[in-house]
Length: 376
Ligand code: PMP
Ligand code: GLN
Image 1 (tube, protein in one colour):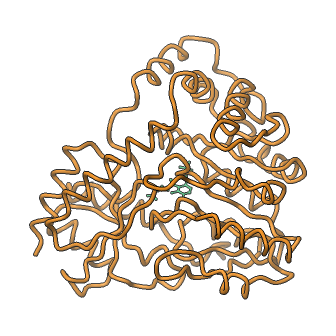
Image 2: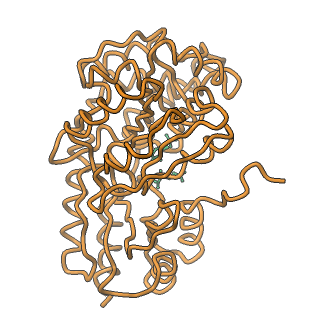
């Protein structure tokens, strides 16, 4: 008997493992390959010799909570109460799992928009609730008619991911207006807003759930320092929720992790005094532009990329293979690893699209692009 009979090994693990086996350039799993800011590693080295090795309070290191509240205020103008509305988590994955466990009940419906990142469905299934997958439009904007049709008295949660992994799409003001109207019709629905790439947007400014007055009392917002500070392996993030939801979320959190790694919390708290989150968007915008320019001469067709550190491309003019086989072929024959987009769809829809991660140093991007441009 399995509680999750249809859940297998994540595609990120599969492709990264294969990249290692074949010594390929790994643009598959999303993680940066450049060194972390020395100011941050210096703080960690200093802290390792200080007395910060024991449990911190369950919700988080109080100075870090206060600094996140200031960050949210400065970024979006929202005033949050650090003691009651903020929780430090072991990455966004734990924030999402904990929120779903705390708020979703047996037989509830949870709306997940396809294509979607892979960590939403399993926690819904573990609640004995129903993941209801609703496809985005072809241009990856939300199809609000379809979403509204999927809503009913059984719907407990809608999960949005903005900026969106894998497509790099961001939501606009009118998306939020429609969502807010929908929530008025369905007072039981909570929004889970996965904004781990909130500081990685390019030409348009990111609109956060934090900045939508009507959502504040209905929404759990999730962020990740792994993305914002290039430390995905630290597994540290946070969630913001109104107090009545946070009370329930904390009940699960205290038995899932109790409190998060102390050195990382203190280090990030000190680092927040030195760094501006605005630098991150500019940094990745340059990477995006450079990678796109490097691929211009290739046979791959570049899809728009408004945020995140992922570039989706079509290989339709190169091959008829399905996208999983194409990714395997790309690793074995051309030494570059990518992620097949079909794995982000519940029905495995194959659109001949793959995703590259451009959070890499320029030497790596150039070496990968050289191999990709050689494919005819
Ligand atoms: N949500 C999205 C959209 C992601 O891409 C990721 C992966 N990095 C996560 C959540 C999980 O973040 P974390 O590594 O902080 O758990
Ligand atoms: N979020 C990363 C990605 O989209 C994967 C993280 C993981 O492997 N769980 O590539």
